[in-house]
Length: 265
Image (cartoon, rainbow, N blue to C red; front, side, top):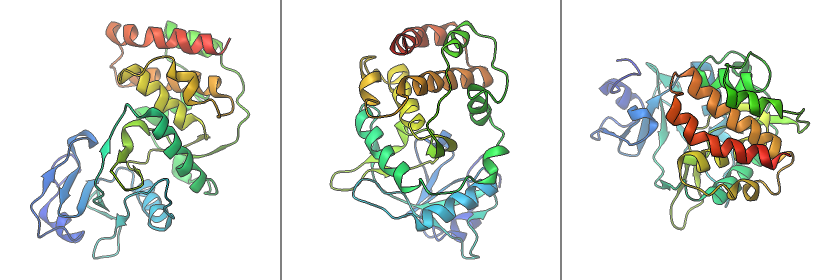
């Protein structure tokens, strides 16, 4: 069974979820499944999956955040037939809570700040990783007037890079009486404030957050305006790379481009 459909019964059994009836979960591109207290999802690049599981197995949780613990298969492996497993943690994403997401992301980034740069960062090849390299000057940018306007205001960002979560907004789960849970870690090696900047851009572009929140979300983050420029260019570039950029997307992003450019003047 491939990681493009339902996991096989053998996969559920390998991770200890064989006795429960599997159910497909919302999110995760429709490829994430729950069986009892076990969540199974496509592992993607096995090097990245094994590295991430090893980190999350040991990462200390705090009152400010937690993460689902990865589950080893009975064989001791983290990945079985292209699938990985994590413990089920209840909670609901709330994209309207941008400032809370930024706060949780800051705590998570502090907790992982000493991690070394993993080798897969340089070899991951998908639209998101390619877009990331493009907006940081490591590959040519698609021809687009909005991207050209954003890139014209790029300046050198001097904040040091570290591992970050590059897709925070919809991947922080809130549950009453529990620390927020960070899921679906998308690792990038960039200045720490970029994770918050991407979350802010996503909130304004896709979830109805007022443009006025853009400067507020990063008021304590160094080089915030430059990071917003890169974050917005990253999302637009990704849409180009997945062939989803059209006139409706341009109309959606145009006022945000104007606002971000105005902040950096």
